[in-house]
Image (cartoon, rainbow, N blue to C red):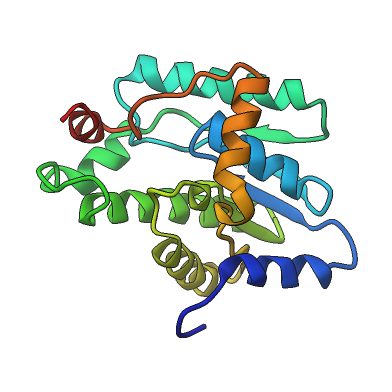
Length: 202
């Protein structure tokens, strides 16, 4: 895909062409962001949530956010599964140790997206999912074009379908805030790594 692409329309086109509910491994960055994405996709896909966020620090914060993710899935009372993997913080640190001084939204974040999406693609392929995708594009602070390009490249590498998205479209982010209030979800005040916390405190 080239040019200025409306990834939300691409997603809508994918959905209209579905003949059955494919298996989707959905990377989730947090419960609040996943709230809208899951409620939007659950009628079209058999969703398993992958909570893989090695960027989150300290570990206590990671555990707190993961518990909220699990609670949300239980609250939704839908047939949503969760694939739990260990807290692999070293996988993140090894890739960004020289990028800590970069501001939020820059190359440090781009590497972080790539780490999480590649793990999702790999796990999806190993477990015979039809698609892999992410909730990251619901945030107005995340670069949907970059995220979709990463997903597209990983789809080719692992021979698995990427679910294009720009979930912030059509008030997706606003709806995620409303759902977070409805389910009384913990909404963190920084993205995940301590560098992003420092940026949010400035």
